[in-house]
Image 1 (cartoon, rainbow, N blue to C red):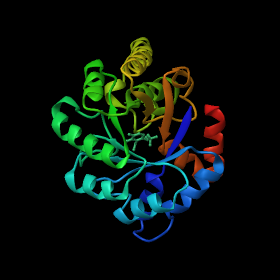
Image 2: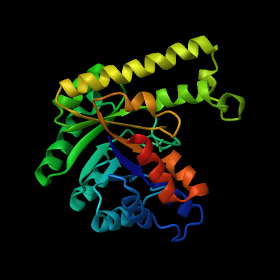
Image 3: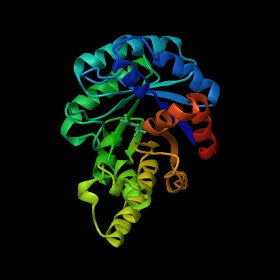
Length: 259
Ligand code: PXP
């Protein structure tokens, strides 16, 4: 299974001071040295972390494939097409959200996504759609011409946090998941089954399968057991660990876990 390291939070830290340090491009070279297979970054409409110049510099200088997450916003897509990244992953975007919440509404944006997919095919850029484990959405993903699907593991990750960490006893407890343990456990097991079924279905449809969101050093095991998943995109947990251990060590530890 391959590891894509999402480096958005390096830019988040830089933007906290609006200066030029830390430079996300430096993270690309460290990630390569540490054994990562891909770099993932998100050019958000509000440019809250990555800027156009970051994406440009990273695509032009990286020895690793670059997977750029983007909304279906025409200006951003036009900009990315000129840069010809290895892959564009289309994600939903809501200005108020802290991070990408929920998967892309493929059916609701079918024509626009189809258009983007066609443009990407012309320049040899792969297209992945970040979606929830919904079987109808998977079929639309195939019909729209995408090469790959990235399954949103956020629900699974939240349930794991509420069941197996102290999150529920902190100020960041997830209110809608403050449920009796038994109920939480059932939801947790169902979230794994949903990911298993969606992965099988996606492979059966001829789509490559990736997964990501909220994955960390403690919750990987059930995901690693899903054989259809060939790639994980992980950001926050790696960057969080890197504060204490350094980025190279944090990535190496994740690479070892995945192996
Ligand atoms: N994959 C996609 C499509 C995402 O939007 C994100 C978050 O930017 C990630 C993976 C990484 O999620 P996390 O930072 O929670 O590991």
